[in-house]
Length: 259
Length: 267
Picture (tube, each protein chain N blue to C red):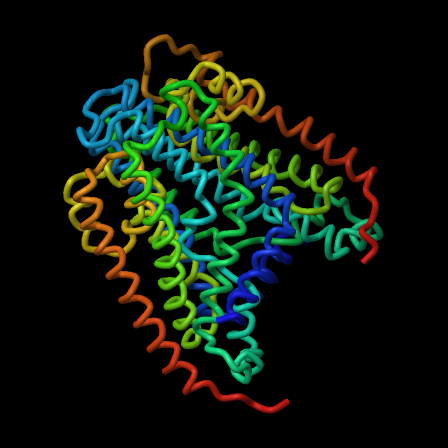
């Protein structure tokens, strides 16, 4: 597949500067470890938050970070879409016989994010292993659903950000409120926040669908249902449809920057 | 001296141009501020809050963090300066009749202040308008306010002095990728930017007292909210100044050594 050829090319490009690549990997790993450390400090003092223990929130942290860094690594082209517009690289995409979505996907793979991915995967495996309950087939399926849904949601957000930057040209920091902010916010179970915030992150940006709601099912919290909790990741993935349509529509409105 | 004044003015005005970026910054800071206020309040509601850091103090601390986010950012990556080191254009700087160390520190400091001036006021107004428990409180006392303003200024210089050491190391490694962001991450954790230091375990607080990082934002904010009394704050201000002197000396020595080794190739 063409994507893998491009991925290989990007990997080769990055590993030309070996020390630099290694340090970027390390820095990404340290970023995730620092976030984990601050979470550990909080629980060291407070032990529990609204009925959630450290080991449970660690699962949440790992899921969110895994999905975010996966999306940042492999869908980086959408994340830095503004650069394509500014440099005029996007203009070339229009004349090639592949969809713009696919070409953007291939345009950038940020392998240094693997550092973050590895740390979050390790935390995920460890925190899942120390849970007191047995992992049945249903729970494993829900966990996989959470991961897939999270990746899809972050892709959708990156695509929305990309569509936005077609109109603003300049990359927009405001999108980070939703991606980075959502990531930091949703490492913690949403029921610790005020109702309004929980609603926004359930119905408008469906972060709750890939961690809070299905996680209640994993931990057998009171009042969980199959339809409302275990299957939540399926509802969350729907966001990709409007995101794709908006992306398509904004491309029609694209005016080249003329470079 | 007048030359440095001019550099300050040029960089200052130059940074003020980026008003859209500042607007986006303000929106981001307000959203993140609210988010952290909600998050840490949830933890405080569990009980077992630290006795020297009340909930109101904690919320004020978080808003101060957001107001001065650009000011206390642990490592300002000046693209121009990095490129000069990496690509060798530094030779032009070396023929100028002024000290490179002073030139660059003034540049970094001016950009820091300009970025902050564009951002802090809207965030402050928002934080004042928020109801009690979600917004910023008045300073602990007039003395605390005065001292924290002094701490604020020294902190900026301290961060710049620490950054200068990082830039000197860049002469050796020649690539800012990775190293700078590793430093920035570790420095933000150790200076209390990720969670306020008074909320950390006792052992961590003891360790951090011996490191320079908390004598920037943490000292300034805690003096303001009154989490440490004036006497302690004064003693820690002396430590802060000592760290500043230390880093300026180290930076200047390092810079001297690095510049001796710079070889300019023709072309």
